[in-house]
Length: 233
Ligand code: SAM
Image 1: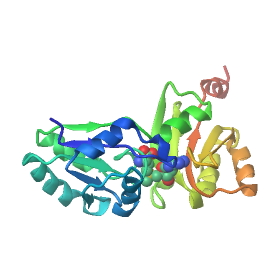
Image 2 (image 1 turned 45 degrees about the vertical axis):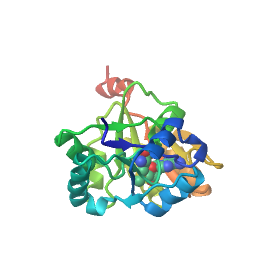
Image 3 (image 1 turned 90 degrees about the horizontal axis):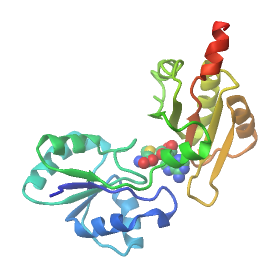
Image 4 (image 1 turned 90 degrees about the vertical axis):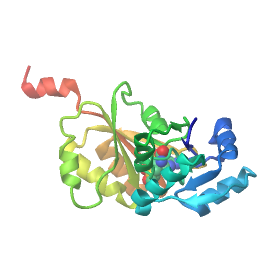
């Protein structure tokens, strides 16, 4: 038996909820939500009324222990985040770990998550890739970027509106202006856009166009060809 389901929810387009996600949300005893107001709106749209309990990153450690106790007594939970797959750059990891450690079963449903469409839309190699999530906001940002200098796999970052330019500039400094990249903005929403080009071209583009909304930045890895010329052979 499963004690905890992780249920992905739409990242913009409400039609992206899966039939199984709805079925599981209907069947559980309690829905744990990163933000009960946001998830309340989704449940209302699905015409589904269920006890909602808040579960966010600030009380994750303590909450996880208490929830596992309730699972041991037989309660079945679903965890949802504001958007996309729970535990991916969202609360959930600690709870999953705690549930597994106590011998109970978890199951994550497949469903919406922002990085997969962004990676595929980018047109960059996707046979191997690394997911970097959010770069540190202040401290450790440069070190993190520098740790990726030799990375040959395609690199995926989650980004916020007001840091896009800073990130593009810092990546240009580190990787050079000709590195290929793609900005996926507002995926699945009315104004979805996927802008592809070199880092320098993307900076130029976003100096003239809106950077509002939610953003995934996909950056090509260091290319082998370049390495060969760098060595001079
Ligand atoms: N759990 C989510 C997932 O599975 O993708 C990610 C949650 S994280 C707090 C939010 C970030 O995901 C945003 O800052 C953005 O980088 C990315 N994101 C979420 N929805 C998006 C969308 N519709 N278009 C582009 N990026 C999106």
